[in-house]
Image (tube, rainbow, N blue to C red; front, side, top):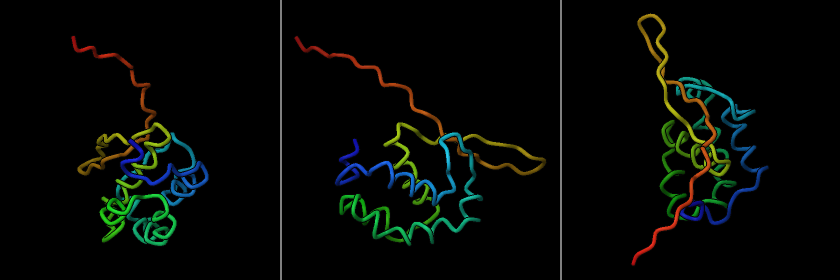
Length: 119
């Protein structure tokens, strides 16, 4: 799965550095897209392009790191969280007449293994 995105699996230090760009200090954080926009995440990821280019395979680098948007930044975050067996879930939070979509980080359950036999 990782080799479909990365030339080599990023080290824990690199993953931590990427997560810090998003303001994530532990894997129990919640944030909204508005939070990411406020912290200028697009500019931060653009500054990390040389580092990220060492890890992404060329076609994925071109796909995710050219014309970076908030949405692509969220996808990049998902890639790095997946290495730590975590994912982002979406849930809505209503506040008066407005609502926000909150992105909590959740640990992915262990995958069950099974064997398929073809007789």
